[in-house]
Image 1 (cartoon, rainbow, N blue to C red):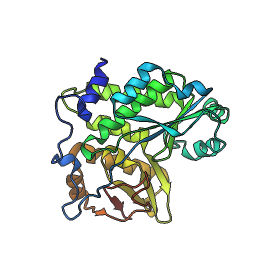
Image 2: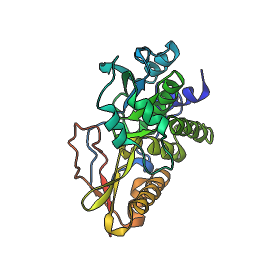
Image 3: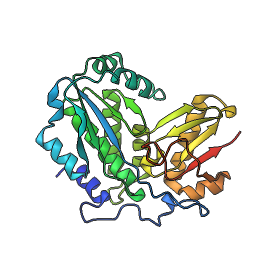
Image 4: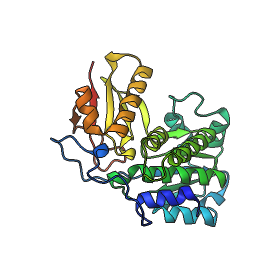
Length: 281
């Protein structure tokens, strides 16, 4: 079995090995005055194909999907174009990373002939990074098998094929830095960049969505602090610190607090059960 795949299976807990982040690990603790929601995040991956062969991935890819505990959704997958996809991808393209998609990626979306959805299992917090790394490996395998476009449906983020493959490669490299641990801060960062979207412009704050896919609270930055690019850099800095040193430690160091409020209902894939951190002006 591929070493990276084995590593992820161990981290998820589907192979006996070193445990993933333990539930009492400082890096995933809530604030002491706030209990986490019982909601468990779930990835929804969307793939587009050039023909109906997309709906029947190669045996090796189908086996990988099943081994990771993911499943192909046969209810909403379809062997025909979805007229909403061009607009959906247009909204979801990651506009933070330079050249995250190309004209060729846009053309592929416009000309797709099939749609496949792949769902993760509901994820325990201590296993979110491992499952997100598995999701990224599935994206890589589906692209290698012929998928012409992909997006993380749960947070509404899309990258071009080249960027997806770059992220998958970076995730593997991060795992190699310390195979003795189930997950690393470096893996958390790559998976966050892959499956979270930021900065979304609200009335008062620039907002992130999807940080729960690496077990972190969302980060909202007051618009009065600067530009959207400034907000994105601060979101990344705080999230990197939280992944490395623990949520509680960074909240204390920066004099920040968790909030329970959310724009999203608990049954919305975008709902973050770990709360929101507001960075005020």
